[in-house]
Image (tube, one colour):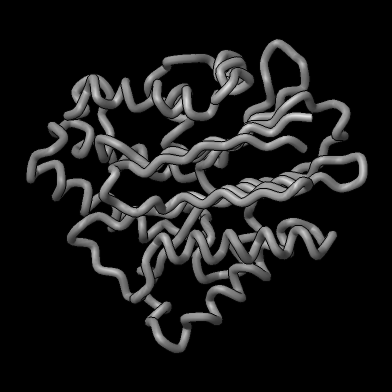
Length: 273
């Protein structure tokens, strides 16, 4: 596989909580869930620590084992939990979490896994590519966004509404009827979306965190097919993130596109044969 990628933090002075790792036969993309000011975490480790430590572990597992991807993800979550369950209080749901995409080229097939609201796109040569995204978070979140989306971004009222929104979503995390992400419970891996497809049926694959997928989902700058066309160009991942940032800067207070924060970490991976 040929892999090209770009990743940019929400703001230059803040750490990038996304993680990208790749070998010739495997790709991992994680999006760490940011914790806004005012929300207390019971873990002393940062979101970046979690996403980067788990991402590194998953890439190692994928290169050393041909086991099912959910099994490898469960092992990775269990391992990272063991690194800090004696130093942190992991029983109250306030520990760091992340979405996960795993892609592996095995023999003549591509195996994939999606957990959380990052997006995987399979270009099979049809007019519309296959788009895989775990939308359970969006289904849970929509009723709780009304007040947040009605407020002007950058105001104290918006910041307080975002804090309440994140705390409310925390009560739905990793439970039936809610949504599932990687955190401290290995059983979350059993709820991932998974699939296998013959490698010769796929012309290209794209992996995007939600901060990059907003080019289609929120800002409607391009269609999924047009997004793949952008990525196929030289420095395509960089170009896509640049388009997202231009849209965000044109609407800094979320008046045209209501959102919980002006910018988000944005990561794009383009895989081709």
